[in-house]
Amino acid sequence: MADDQDRTEGEPGGDARAHRILTDIAPRSWEHPADRAALEALRKLPLFDEILKKLFGFFGEKPIRLAFQANAVRVSPSQFGRVHALYQDVLKTLDAPAHYPLFVSQTPIVNAGAYGMDQPFIILNSGTVNLLDDEELSYIMGHELGHIMSDHVLYKTMMVLLVNLANMGFPIVGLAARAILVALLEWHRKSELSCDRAGLLAVQDPDVVMRTMLKMAGGGSSDETSLQEFIVQAEEYRTTGDVADHVFKILNLMGTTHPFYVLRVSELREWIESGAYDRILRGEYTRRGEPNRPYQEDLREAAQAYAEGAKDFLNQMTDAAKRMGEDFMGGFRRSGT
Image 1: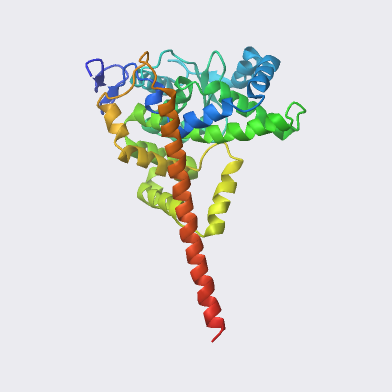
Image 2: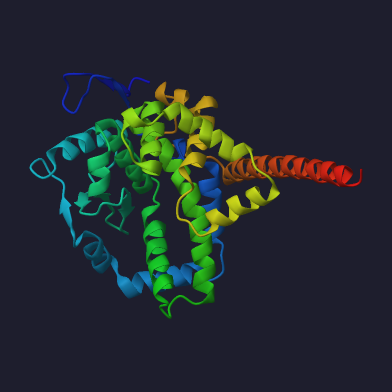
């Protein structure tokens, strides 16, 4: 497309590898259909709007913003200058509609987040800044920017509040709110898959993204880890195990805010192999301001994504049950001779 540009070495914010500037890209270009389906299902929950409004009114925008930013440093040319320069590049590559504030918070935990309601912002943990190289950090910032551009931050902030209140036993978290929390967690795990794609589009190098996931999962430096072995590990986790293993995999996920990194690697590789990533880099993507697709198409695509996931899980369960049955019958026959 004529509107798209390459940023090359020597330009402000550029590096040795050209990036395609995704002019006017609409978030639905990278959103996982299960993300949209889960959010739509969440909005249909009884009392969802009422509880969200009560929480919003109870806390308000400013107290929440201050609470998140109270122990953090705002990034600027003179505060974390390296991070600031990388962030400008990410904002430009994804053609962000605004310059959202970025903060660094002192904590060794390797993580980051996008929060807020009407005025979203991003917080990077200092452990993340210290562990990751420039490209890997750019991926993290692109991932969090994806949350903001996809309008995830309100629900994400509410989820964090509910998790904290539930852990504290706060009385506002009754049965209805707990049901909403479970649904929010399910949606948030799907939203992470969307924003992994946004982060990839920000750095435009799949190896960088998967290398970052390897570091986020286990720490360590690139010279003491193997990305290829991590990819093999991801495939083994997804496809192997007995019936009990598959049940435990689901149960382990239920209380988490994020999918496991080995699963995220597999999901991202599938998206790349589908050709969608390359099409976006060629300029074939939905632009902001273009009419949305009919809602029925979104539902069909989301239903297909959930159906394929369920089918894959069922096939794995069937294979595992078959192997377990064969092992049992083999042992039974041996015991009878």
